[in-house]
Length: 302
Image (cartoon, rainbow, N blue to C red; front, side, top):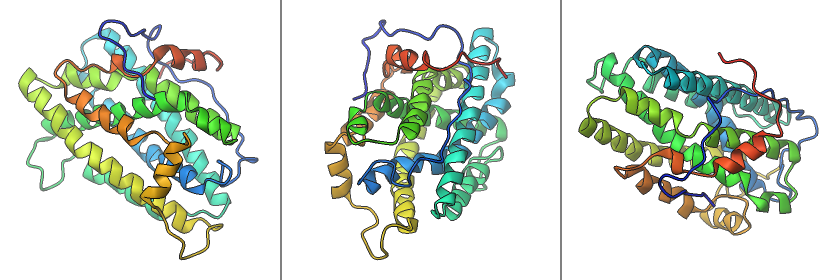
């Protein structure tokens, strides 16, 4: 369950975020890394389809916006965020290589994801979006902030998802997910603060923030369903003709604690719409830092 802290009370990270040294040996990780639960595993595997391109795009957008940052503390946090996201992208790319080695082809889907971020959300707005680049960057920053709301919620969930442990989930995959989830909670406020710093006058800034979330939430849901169907359809161990994805199967996985509840994900949206919203009240920083404390200290910033 996602933790929402009362106003004024959430613990904060001790200094700017920074990338950590991590290394994952995938040779012993089975294709169905949650034993007997291919649907739940593939729902989570959609992260590997989306994040390599998505987190490279985060870094690109922030690099373009760095000249707009005039607060040295925020600048340090943004650079740390960029370093962490670049590391996440690389590590999830290695999982795609591991899936390919097990004859699960993801290339067609990831090419479409690449096109989404590089063309639709690239530096130049699509022809049907009548905005100059100087304003389009504000929308792209707002999209990053909206996506980061969900990554913080998912990160907080996986840190305490005991159902995955009870099901005997592969420890290497669990470590990847929990390391990444903990860093998402650690830098939960950076994208939001970056957008607020660069976003312009209050009323328009809030309208843009809410509007981009109205696009982000259904788009992510659609991508997740399509990604899960792709993975199940191309899974060489699942006979052709079997159902690719069912809501009933998804809900059974939620009941077992293998996936976050629809309620926890859906509730993240109205919280984000509040005028008083700030991500520092999302998730448990204490749990995130406790998990990250087991990992070697961060290397130097980018």
